[in-house]
Each structure stands twice: as structure tokens, then as C-alpha cells.
Length: 639
Image 1: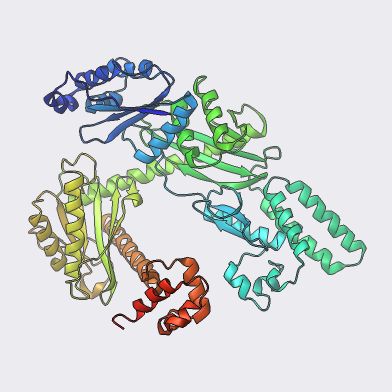
Image 2 (image 1 turned 180 degrees about the vertical axis):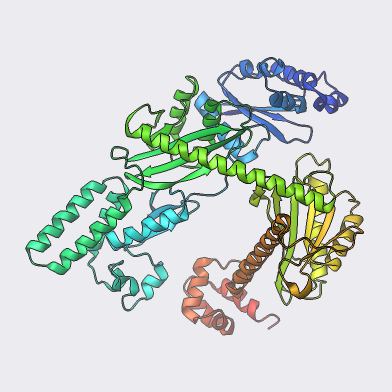
């Protein structure tokens, strides 16, 4: 892969560039200048605005032939014409093949979030089931995040609930341990899971190593799609135990078979001939789109999840699905089959299939089923997509009405597009944090939430006013630095402060000091006896007022305030828990996990390490004389 970044066109002045965002013609001129040196090769192109932000990322089999289309307004939607009008520069990356370009495009879109691309704004990772491979007695656990632990991963599952339910039945079926390695090594007698027949107690060797390995192999086979074979073997073993009059053993096999049956049970459709597939259904309405994905692995339904990509207003179903698949599988291993509600274009389908095959390391089939079980599954997924989009549009409509009510109550010119709510949390000033939550027309914008660890050492412990001053100062100074022209939608239309006139006064002072006079500030105090429903609102020069107890706008504002309170408290508790789990050894440079473990095993506690002499420290495995001196000096400064 080669990277090419053409210099700005030599025949355009800085004044020309500064005027580029003024219209389509100026942007088209910028692109025409880049076309002079653009190669006729596969690659990825990026459109950038005057602030250096990426507006759009696209891929092409022939860069020059693809990009030249942006110089003519015919055939371009108004949205793309606006994008061209904002373009002042471009960046080009050439690749060896169009498939490489497709993979790179998906990676860049997910990393850069260009405003004019179809965006899959979902930052939640999917949970998996992991059978560990770094211990003599493998463990079966839920895993989320990077796959950096040795073992075999099975999934993805649509939600934590789906994986927890499956994991519970797998423990009943295969009796594998779920405890951590440290608990496993410290057991002297079986735990409760052994008593309720959900573990075979390998920790105290109630099962031989060979028999436990056999259970692990059965679990691996079941999760790999050989469920029928595993079940037949268990039935055979149960019948044999019954013939031998080993009825207790037969009952155990019976319970394991029942657990497997519960995993394989279906509430709607049972795809007998679909061992591994993702069913991807798209529904579009009202300028919005919902994509429903059902996960089928090992012949089992691992759940489903809804996605609502942005930037789909003027896109065809084929374009939306192609963009979704590229971003969705950018960090996931594709299954053997991907079933689609709409076929991709003749150009995109073979390209996408080859790209997914490269990600999976094997063939991946893309198909839009027309009959049979696969068609029924697709219809079921499509119905779910349609219903999910209907619910979202209804919720969005209700949210718009509530924001209109907020604008009316607070005297705003229009419904706010971005509402920020602030709250602080601490215990007698310790581990103090500030929390900011954000809401808009689509509800809570959780990817915009921010936490502020209070850094000032001059604050009196418990000084809520000082904490609020620090939080708001940091927030709006950063906004002024990163988005001075307010083009990125990061500035609020309305700021709610959880507090009365005192907190509101601090907020006013901060904005005044920063020269900000066009952000509406509202304080929410608890009211008499701190009763919910009797909140007092403080805004501008108006006298404090309350809303009727049954006013939907009041409930909406309470929900915003409570969400800010929940977020601030949760952040504070996480920080406090982290501090409680910290060790003085963490402060010593050169003491990593291995040396820390050796020291604690030798002396029993960090306090014991601190009281140890130099000779004692040098006796610890892995601690050199130099390191022992460093540890000793840390606990005995000036000694």
C-alpha cells in the first residue's frame, strides 16, 4: 500500500481556499486541481474542510474516474453538493486492490466518523463465551473486549443477557468451572456450584483430569456447531447408565441433556440447516433507517440487536447495507453466511464477499434468500427492524414535543438541539468528580457524556461551588479551543445545573469570564422539603418558578437531572473503588505485576514490604540489590 498526499494546488491562493466553503463551484475547483495528479488506481480518498476535519471517506477501483464525478453537480444529492462546497483539500491513499480499498475505507470511517458518510454509531462491543487455554483446568466465562487471553472464543452474542443465559445452561450441561484462577487455587473444598450440579469441582479434584478434558472437548464441540453429535452421545451414555442400574449417573446425564435442549429451544423459528449465519434486515422510513441483525451460531439463536445508522436520508437500501457491512465487520470475524434483506449491487456483492472472506480467513456467502427457512428468518428480522424503527420514530416525536415544551417554559427561540446537565459527586470532598450528560432530539447522547476529575488543590474539601467552577471552566475553554466557530455541534443550546442560585451564579460568572453570552443557563433546586415534583427553576432575571406536578416537561427535566446525578455518582464510585484497590507498590517505578506479586506473596502485604529490611527484600525472587534499594528508599525517605 502506498500513501500519496498531493500538495495544495499551486494556482490557488489562500484567499481562494478560504472562500471554498462558499459554494459548490469553489469546492469543485479544488477537486479539479487534485485530479491533475490523481492516479488511475484503486484507493481511498478523503475530503477535508478548512479546519482539517474529514468530511467524507470513499473508495474506488479507479480513483480518478470516481473523484471526477464530484466536479459535476448533475447526479449529486444536495447533501453531497454541500460536502463538495465545504471541501478545501483532499488526501489520497492508493492500494493494490479494490478489496484493500474497501477494508481501509471501513477502518477510516469507523475511526474518523466523517460527517457525510453513512455512519454506524455503535460503540458497544459484543460479548463472547471464552473457553480459556492458559490453565491446566480450562474455565468457561463471558468475555468482552480485546481477545488478548489465550483460549477459544465463541459468539458474538447480541447482549450480556443472551450470553449469561447461555452460559448458565452450558455450566449445567458441561460442569466446567467459572471461578477465577486465584479462587480456584485457594479452594480446599467444593463451592456451592458443585452442590447444585453446575460444576464438577476440579479445584479439589472431584473429577479426574482426563474426564474434565472430555467435558471441555464436549463443550467445544457443542459451541462449534456439533450440537446434535454431543447430544446423541449424552443420550447413549444415559441409556447405558440406566441399563447398568447407575440411576444417579443416568439422572445426571438427563439433566445435562435438558440443559442443552434449553439452549437449542426457539421462541419462533428453528433454523435446522443454518449452523452459522448473521441475518441482516434493513427497513427505511421517514428519512431514517433501522438494521436488525440476528446472530445464529452452532444452530442456536444468540440474540439480535438494532442499529440506526446516520446519514442514510438519500441513500438506496443497497448503499446503506454495503456501508453497514463494511463498518460492522471491521472489527469482527464474519460468519460463514450473511443473509441480507436486499441484494447488494452487482459491483459491490463480489467485492464485499471477498473482503469478508479475507477478514474471516475462509469463504463467506452473501445472499438475499428467496425461499425456505432462510426466507422466513429474513422476514422475521425485517418485521423486527420495521417495529424497532417505528418505536424509535415515536420516541423521537415525543422527545421533540418535550423539547418544544422546554423551549416554551424557558423562553428559548427554538427547541434545543443539545442540552447539557452538570452535577458533582464526592464524599466529604474526597475523590471528587463532576459529571456532564447530554440529551438531544434522539434522547440521551451517551457517547457525549464526560467526567471531570477535580484537579484543583486549592479547593476546600466539599466546596461544591469551586468544583462546579472548575468543571464549567474546563468544559467551555476546551469548546472555545476545539470548535471556536461552533460548526461541529459541540456547543449546548441549554445548560442545566443541578443546584440553586449559588451554583447558577458560579455558572454565570464562568461564562462571563470566558466571554460567552449566548448559552442559556438554568438552575434546578429541590424546592421545599426536597420533594420531587416541587423543584424550583432559576433562569435569568425571572423569579424562581415551579411547573405543575403533572406537567410532562417537569418529568422530562427530572429525568435529565436524575441521569446526571446517576452518572456523577457512578463515576465517583468507580474512582473511589479504584483508589481503594491501589497499592503503595504501584507508585514505585520498575515494580510491575510480576514483582508486585512476588513481594506480596513473600511478605503478605504492602505494609509488610514497607517494614522489610534491605536483606529481606533482596531475598525475594526477581528483586535485585538495586531494586531492593529503590523499594527500601521509597518506604524510608531520608533514612
